[in-house]
Amino acid sequence: MRCAICGFELDSVDEAVEQGWIPEFYEGETEHGFACPGCSKVFLECGEDGEIEVKEEYRGKITYRDEKPKENWVMGVIVR
Ligand SMILES: [Zn+2]
Image 1 (cartoon, helix red, strand yellow):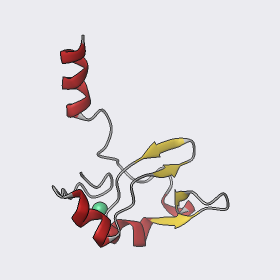
Image 2: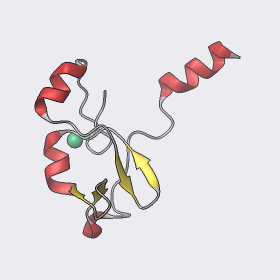
Image 3: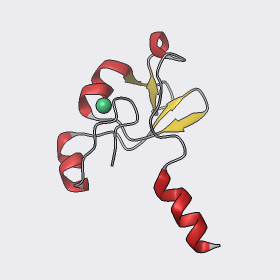
């Protein structure tokens, strides 16, 4: 898994869970994931509806690294 905000990569899902990685979060209607503990502390907060959201002051300012993941693209080609 890779942090959508800073791009930090971690191979072990168990380790990520242990460290408190966030599996998904929202900026407006857009879903992103994952977020490492460092980034989630700085950029994310728990919204009114219980979902993890980007803090208002950072919305529209983060360049996400989770867009069009290569793995999915490769999978799509194989499936077809
Ligand atoms: Zn991060």
